[in-house]
Length: 281
Image (tube, rainbow, N blue to C red):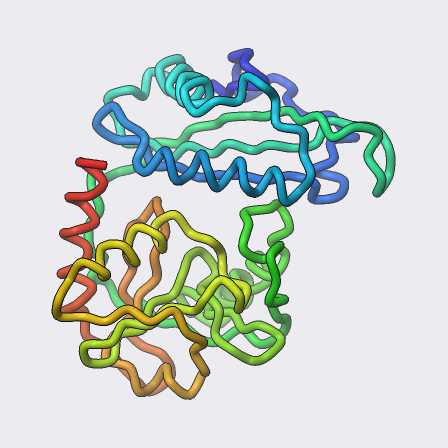
């Protein structure tokens, strides 16, 4: 089942028209949320990121778009799909409902909620070999629009194709200043001794919900110092660990980048704390 503006319908039913602005111009936003144990993980952060992104996109936020209303709509969709006892990946898309070409006739919005069952009820550390490479064909622009989850993900699509064609598990993306920004599907963290680095939002990385959670967790640990600072490609091979974060997988350790192979000690420690916070938060 999907939820199309509050109406539940089968996946096979028509949900989008050919004039949909998300389809035609990428004039849309989305959130991916993990549901497990009867709750939406980090729901408040997802909600406020969505509201902030809609303001950046100059979308008209409906009066009924409260945190409680959207949570009810998501849970309603999960229950209608008989998935309330499963772990679920929820995707919510919001697009501008308007005629017009580049200039919309209104800033009103519509939304669609879909779900997909996940295998594990809590975050686990993937110990399979995981190799990455830089994707240098195109660059992310360091700016505010790069920090939001819009439907403009061509670099991520092309980078994913490049990774698949060259037998890499993932790619790291660069901005126009040749700074390492993020992975194809999440934020990047670099561990070097007691220092943990992650690129700042000003470099163009996604304002990730798991990134925010992990920054807060590391800030409470006396053994580590967190730095939001630019990362050059030359630093990657000097690091002790590299890992990628997002709210669906949690934390993905990187095994190898070029000739350098990495540990997973800090990643393992942090993942256990992420699971605790997800359950309590």
